[in-house]
Image (cartoon, rainbow, N blue to C red; front, side, top):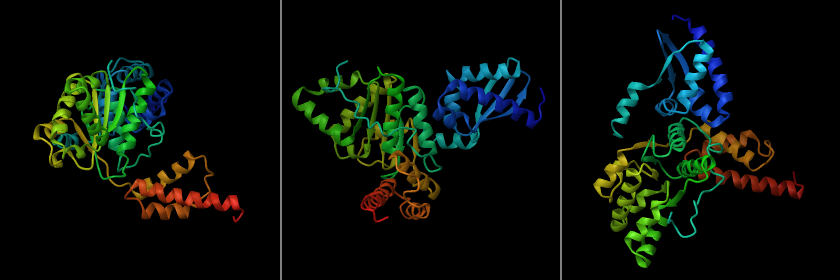
Length: 338
């Protein structure tokens, strides 16, 4: 079947419109489907190109692949086999070769409900991290396991950990998701060893389905804790339970951890987050004002642009500067000075 590019575009726009309606999930659609396109139809095969390898992984698996196939064949009135390819296939191959119910007492996921995918502002600096995190949240333990997010402090790694946990819990209330910092992990290790012993500690993790560990680099100075974590890590991987970690550096640059542990970290998918661009920083500021139910014009855009230019290297500093301005603006408004 030979089709002009305009006809392919017309078909694909109709497919996407129906997919979006059927999904009824703006985040899933915008992350995995929105920038896709129909690039070729020949014989009984239709080739769909998506922007990232994460989108390819998600769409190539059910339920999205079956949904897409069904809608595509309804729109075309045919029976095509769909093939999903990513836009940067060769580059991704080179990059991935590098990356080649007893529970806690009063179990608590420790999740911050304010940290969601919807509240995470996506830009070029963090797009891959967001897409990989969402893909892991869609099918915990199936796609990217372990998933390792790295980057300097204040770039959104912790936000993504909580977003994964909140998304999973929103879709499946029965799944046990635990967010824990390395400091909390170390404290739990010593408390349980002191009270009940190693096996009791290990058993506490058996009923957890997803573990989200922040700042894994702090385990480097704790040899015994690192050995224990290795056994927990293997427990999760061998049971196809999702594990996601963050660090201030990529796995192969972690010093002080056993080589076998670093090697296992690097065996999954490692994704870096970098400092947000000016445009992304500006969007973050606008989004934070909206989240706090403030009037959009409470602070002039020129002022927000200045903050975005000055504090774009660290999202926490960015938010801190904004909070000071909001406090000042509210104080002036309440006093009648403005």
